[in-house]
Image (tube, rainbow, N blue to C red):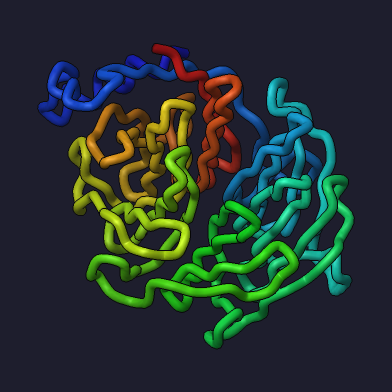
Length: 314
């Protein structure tokens, strides 16, 4: 199914001609649905609450499933189930509600456990190595961890309960925090995803402020964009965030059941999706990840208990 048709229909429905998007380049993007991964259930390869993604150097797509506490691995090209780890339990390798995930430069996998405050580190073959952080508001603690990223030996993690971004080194040592509750520039009301763009800046979806904020790697505020609404360029509960190889910013919107694409300065390029359970439709969107090598976009269609996969075409 060519989801590019949805892009055109959405723009017309909003009273925005596609030619009006030409202020941002490229002027037109289209998306072809190539496969769906998973379904509702408890078995291997099935989901109950898909949250976020990471890609490994060996071609695996890692998916966090919050309700079942599994992290599942799939072949990124075929969607075939490969393995899972974590799961409910009291041992060090177990998880309670995994949401944020990131893969380090040596292949280590880091998982943010939303309910416990723990961040757990695993080997590239999914063996537990280390647990750090804990539930709370003191420096180095967190409440409700979300979608995180790694840059230059540091882990950047949204701390929703404290409305801040916490930064650790990859051995679990606390480095710094920035943000705080509010709507002023540099403040947050539910920071959902913190991901680095190709430009080296950290982009944060500020969910209840309906905006994206941009920081340098030391937490200095640089710029922000977005306002509440359903029009092109507007946002409603932005959650997941990722980048294509050209540096375009993809934002999942829980409130609008769509994925919207911006240039790095917040100028809208395209949008696709609508409410529902069909191909190219979404319910309660969460994480996103783009594979820059293959121009493939993976979308956490959380309310439909699946991952939808799209090919970017131009």
